[in-house]
Image (cartoon, rainbow, N blue to C red; front, side):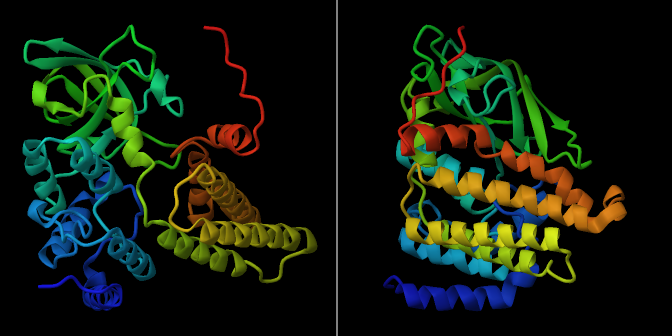
Length: 371
């Protein structure tokens, strides 16, 4: 059977979503909240049953075998329908992408088909208390032990760590090498003895993230993905090479702008000026995104920083307009409490400013503190 054209596939996607969007969980974005695991898994299994899991992944590994352009259409149509396009980004973008590029045939067969079928959930074990945006400073170590490894250390801000079967882990395997050069990339089973996730309570009251402690956790030798001490390259190749999400991002931004416009009402002069400023900034970010198209570049930092700050100031305005009610439990309060997290997640706003200044504007590098 020949592959569908892009127009044919868009029609197929729309028909499926018209019939099944009611079965999907709310569109939680890239990060699956742990309390929606069951709904997310059920949705992923529905996608797999209808040939809509791993659209641009090889058919022999459980995917559809289509092109990245087909995948981009799927992301756009899911954004329009307000449903998740897959279970979570960690498993279906980062883990599967890394395994496809660097895994052995045995590793690909072991991990990719059950992931696409919704049989396992993945988490990301990258950030640490002392290594967040500066990930290369991580100190979790993996020491060779016979034909396996012993891992000790701590990870933090691990989304859904306590409800995941598998995790992608970056750990230091050569303490004497330059900090980027002594890191390896592993795919591990979260139920291994010596691995303990602990929920992190946020000021919103939720515990969306976990910290994960490794205490002499033994992992097998074939958990290593890619070259020994080459884990930095494994991670960066997938983080910078993914394409196709820009259309879905623009749809989300358009909805945010529509929500902003709906706040107009009977605002006073100062608040009306604040709202107009947010709308004009947001519209500018939309045009930047459209010009960027599918190319990944350092210009992405402009969008990350701009949209993050837009969301933060939108939450501030909404809370101010709510007045005294913003001191009580409600949407305005929840949004205000959650907004600061956007300045940290996915690369902090400070790091984005450094990238913009150094790589786009050619400014001198930020001075480093003496070690």
